[in-house]
Image (cartoon, rainbow, N blue to C red; front, side, top):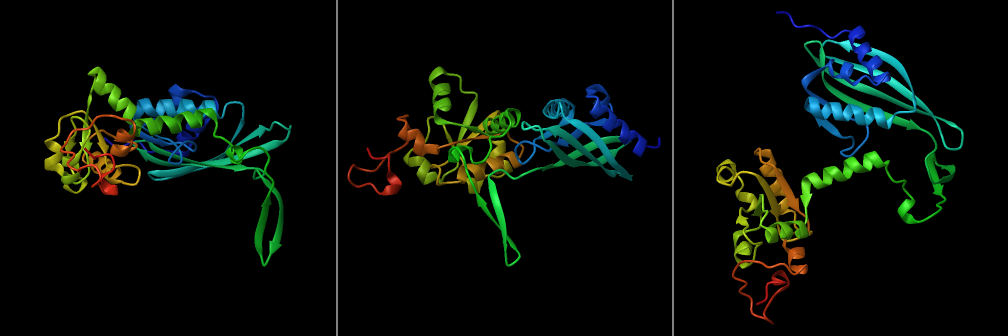
Length: 292
């Protein structure tokens, strides 16, 4: 059977469905494994994969732009790729008009959209610019700030902030939450110590397994219990937990990183397991918190 091809008219239907916020029509034009890279959010831009996520992503972006006037632009289809230009106009709080321009880069399969990658430009005055002058062909700027340094860069819209912090919580946990799970007997994850084994032997989190980051390979990962893995190392000055999380995720495991690591676990007074062999008064900086 010959595959259906994407056409300009069919891609135009997608733009029309977007303009009238018809989610069902939009989803009828994408593949089941579609990937949507939104024009706002972390990364930058939030990535949605699969029908359920893409539907939520479309709904979020439609809500984000609600109240703005949408205008369609040039639409091009070239085989299994295409792009579409679009713009929005909106009324600003001071009664002025502002334009937002953007484009979508598409990939197609069997007449439907398998990937939508969105980009946008916001046309307007850069906040905090009081004046400009030219020196040797270079634009020099001076900024006049009002308010505190905290608000010198405007805060993100609430929806964008929500997506950003949800992404962080999807990738991180902290000592307090891990300790609460241990205390309440609700541990549904495996702690993975990514430091060298000698460091693990000195002190480690209760119940943690030792898997130095350099030893992470398919065989070692296959031997780990199933479920969520939580990596940690010494502390914020160490990135072995980050490297370990990356390798574990690359090998197909769900993983979070324990922010603060062993250092902040000890700072918060949590118990550790291990030999703790350093006598008081004989410790080095690397033995902080491990003195018996």
